[in-house]
Length: 382
Image 1 (cartoon, helix red, strand yellow):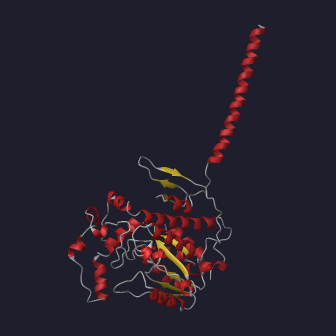
Image 2 (cartoon, one colour):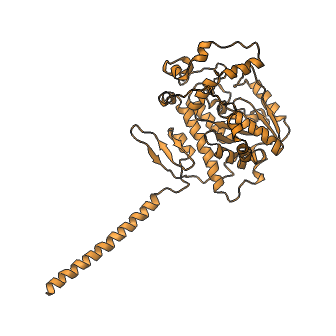
Image 3 (tube, rainbow, N blue to C red):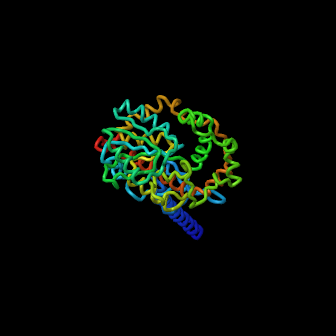
């Protein structure tokens, strides 16, 4: 009987020991899970995107999708640097209260231009834009850059100037630096939009009214659809790396408008143009918005450049239907994802630049959320 009781006692003791040990292991595992679990603010930084050269699909939530042949990985990375709202705001580095919007075509720039025109009445600043030209020159010779910088510098404060033109560094001409802004868009969607924009009937009606002697284009060129253009490897839709295709406004290169007027910026989809464009954004641009995320763009503009964009969200959404109809092309047919993927394979660095600008915008937005006082104090604006 005593032997049976001894065996029972040992069994109970062993069970208790295993229970306590298992609970301790479970507790340790939970602690490890908490340490490994990414926080709300964790996000892949723009510097990581730049150095790794990957194509991603990111959002303000911080989820970054890496494409793989067989599946998609959704990963969150911890932000290594501290988000300093002062360091992220280039507005205060400008020398004068003059806003220069060197707008990229087909990124909703007509909408933002109209928004600025309405805000000029509300916020009390001068609105100026470039006149419509027969042949629009994007890259300027040094003497033309000086003339442009001199003209913009002559505007009284506060003022806005808007023009399709490459980034111009005013400091190279010993002239005061303006507040630079721009907008970007998914580069493949943008190039499709441009393709059909220059073929839209109303586009040529407007051009003909302004320039009556302007010859009409070849009807076969007008009727050529984008998918056929890509699949037949038409020169207009080949998008070869390193190719120089100036033409009248070669708007395939979104990076061109940030890279500058150097000949190093002209070859298509090159690393040199990409790095120069990134450097200009980081060093000179107060805000580079994203067409696909108007809410974030307006929020950052309002808070980082309040002198010009105070009340922008209210103005935009008060007449959102009017704004969304501006310059909209109803003659643009759908393009298959297969054809878009073919084009994307040749737009690798343009896509990387677009993602870089998105990450920077979201970094500015997240810095706002970490700041106690919003909107920013007027000391951050001119």
